[in-house]
Structure formats: structure tokens, C-alpha cells
Picture (cartoon, rainbow, N blue to C red):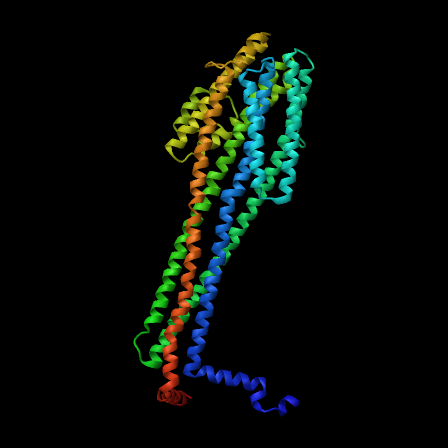
Length: 479
């Protein structure tokens, strides 16, 4: 009742009616259009800068932190497997100081410690990752003590050295609590971080859909405003509004181009280079495991069944069946009739160079299998001295030489794929940064629209009463 007694100018309904009447006038409608265009243009710039800025930061983290952390764990796994292999070969050589195997073991552990330091500095998982890295470092230090004791006992020809050697190997390879299992668990945490980064990119894609809708709304507003000004003021065109429309089209086209380029680069890196990189590091670690178990089988002599099973499991993961010359020749022609990680790389190779590198891995694998068969033949004959000579030999046809060929060929193709990954995902970062910068031009749309409408508003306000009178007359006749 009190509200009904108030003057109309103080009621909510009265205020709404006055606003509507004002918006219905030419100056009011022009001011409304100007304000709406400015607001939507600013919203467009904000959404675009936010989406592309988040995408740029995420892609940068994927390139420089997350994927390097994942590959770093794969590298640590491979280095630890190689250290265990080299330790077994050093023990087999009698623990002498000047052996290639002992040098490689020492080099591998030093590389593991350096990689752990790099992982700690660039750890994408904060406190959780740091604790796990510290635990791994502690286990590696304990493993080194066990292997040092085994090597020392080997120099003194003490049989208990095999106990420490086996204890170190068990510590390395226990399924759930071993060092390699701990490394793989941390790698899985980093993989989960990569999945979260991919989710952020998907959210950015949703924001780009919103950006497209807002850009469409700005275009509709600009076209409507131009038509309104042309009809109301009898002018053919408003140059500033035309410029704002051209800027909008330029910003939209450039944004679409940069987003397509970035999306293609990220998709190519994550769907092609990154899986190949992980697969090749896994293949390298399996090759180290296979060579390690072969060395332990020679040390174990008659009690080598479990090591033989481990060797066959590792080799089957690389190539799932006995490899023949015909199969190798068919693979060189593009027909891969076997499975395994090496077969996966042969099928994934997209260029002649990549296929050539993959074929070098396959041929090196074939020579490694042949050298291993020669060692096994000596073991079966009871020729322990001959088996040890072939297992530690560095001449063509001997196991160390054959394994080094396989390791070198894997390292070459890994580096090629790593370069491809860096180049591919690196090419996504400049377009994303450019897209963020382009959004500044969206603010020019707001400025041009404001400058384009301000003279018309001023013109009408100062001396265009006749125009308004004619507009009211036409409105009266229509009613």
C-alpha cells in the first residue's frame, strides 16, 4: 500500500518505463548498442586470452616438464636395468677394476643420480613426487652397497658374493617394492599429470566454442548497428564501424588459424611421437633386462632355469616369435609378420629414414639373439669358460658386441623420435602465444565502435530534433 502511494518517479515500474522510453530514443538506442558492443568485445578478448593463455601454459608444461618427467623415469628405469646387467657382467669377469662392465656399471649409476637430480629440480608433482624421488635415491644407494660387496667378494673369489649379487638384483626387480617398481609408480603419477593437462586443453577447447559464440554476437551487433545508423541518419556507411567489423573478421580468422595449427601440433606430438618415445625406452629397458638375465644365467651355471624364463619374457616382449631371415626381409619391404615393441615401431615409422632406423634395430636384435644362442650352447655343453668368454666378448658375434649394437641402434632411433617430439609440440607454442596477443585487437573493436557512434550521438543530441520528430511521426503512423 505504501508503494502505491509513492510518486510514479520513485517506483520500480516507473524507473523501468523511463529506461525503456529512453532506450527507445535514438541517442538511447545508440548508447545501448555502443555499451553492448564494448561489453561483448571485451568479453571476447577476455575469453580468448584466457583460453589461449591457459593452453599456452599447459602445452609449455607438457613440453618442458611433464613429458620430460615421464621420459626421465623411463630413462632411469633403463639405466638401472643396464647397471644391473653391467654389475652381473662385472661379477662374471671376476670383479676386476679395469673391465668394461664395471666402468659401465659406474657410469650408469652416476647417470641415474644425475637424472634423479634433474627430476627433483623439474618435478611436476610437488611434495608427492619429491618424497618418492628421495625414496628411490635411498634404494639406489643401498643397491650400490650390495653390488659393491658382491664385486669385492668376486675379487677374493668368495662364493658368498653371489648372495649379495642376487640380493641386489632382487632389490632392483621385486614386482611391487623393488627399485624399478618404484620408478614405474612415479612414472604413472607423471602420466596422470599428463592426463590432467589434456583435460585442461579440452576445457580450453570448450572456451573456444564460447569464444566463437561471442564473436558471432559481436558481428551481429556490428551489422545491426551499421544498418540502424544508415537508416536513421541516412548515411551510406560508418567507416569506423566498418573498420571494427573488418578487425573482428581479421581477429576471428587469425585466431582460428593459430588454434588449428596449435591443435594439430599437440595432437601429432601426443598421438604419434610421445607413444613411440615411451615404447622405445621400454624396449631399451627390456633389452637391458634380457642381457642381465643372460649374465646371471651364466653365473648360475646349472641352476639357470628362472633366469632363462626371464630372458625369454623380455625377448618375447620385443619380438613375440623366433625371428627368421625371411621375416626380416619381409619387414624391410613393409610386411611385418610378427608383434612386439620392435614391430610396433616398424609399423609406426612414417618416413624412409624412420623405417631404416627401425630396421637397424631389428637386425641388431637378430644378431643379439644369435650371439645369445652361442653362449647358451656353450653353457649346455658345460663349457663355462667358453660361455663366459662369449658373454663378455667385444668382438663381432660375441654377446657384448652384439648387445652394444642393439643398444646403439635403439639410442639412435630414440634420439630421432625425441627430436621429432620436441619439434612437433614446440611448434604449438608460438601459435598459442600469437593467439593470446591477437586478442588485444579485440579491444580495438570496442574502441572503434565507441568512436564510430559518439559523433552520431553528439549530432543527434545537439541539433537533430527534427530527425527525432520525424522518427516519432513515423512511429505514430505505424501505431
